[in-house]
Image (cartoon, rainbow, N blue to C red):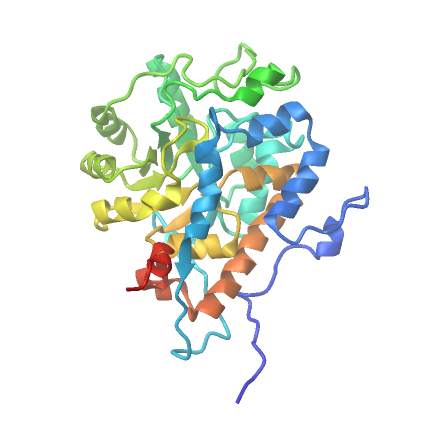
Length: 384
């Protein structure tokens, strides 16, 4: 006998009623992440929007990050269990989160909204998610920590030639209650963003990267100025310098995943820097299985790049990701409506994931297995 699907506290929307988020200028209520981006485009300057949205060179990897998710097909299994309620809770680095979607590090967020990183951190904390705070933030890490004392915050780290500057950042993160360091390994030199060149991008004069120095030098969008060349031996040194878990961000091969594990890391983020570094590298989702297989459960594996829907999240989890992280969608939510906009983006993904799990026959995160996803080539091969 059929019955209506029940909703539980795990499934219900906990953000403010969507009517409260309606834009004063008459824009319709966004119902998906693409809608949020469309509204954000109208609210941001061309300088800011192009900086956030652009990728390196021909933007092949940027586009493929999203397109690649479409190349994977879901194989739902029906009638095995009651999926009228779903539990999306999990842990990352041993810390409970309500669902496996966090916010990736993105620089200079106050270009999108005056509250910047503070609003993003509040939104993540309000839905018990994780925010990764960027080295190149336009808010001080201590201010964000003080504003979200119970929030789960990780600190994204670049290693500078000035060793004291790097050490100071780490100690400040530790003292401010950040729960992990996310070491970015793919940005010694910056990929070429043609949009930034055409726009002659610079950070607006009223903003600066608040955590690097007190000299007020403007951020010009260029990575690599003063960055130290890194080796895997430096990752081991970092592990010995801090008691925080260390996650390396930027791994795209099984070989580097093995080296990361051998260096003692606590987590790996499969990432191509949002398509902003070396153009032509594979989409993150396409190398996720390779990395997971190489790691063999010795550390947690995460993914960022191209996630735009709950089914994207489901596919990444089935392919072995412990959690996924979103970058641009959080920025677009921030531009759309500040803290409430970021929260709305997270809730959209959470609710879409919950529904996708129900339709795929999964009642909890543990039910999401590798057999749920196959590459589309399985169905496109000619039959003999």
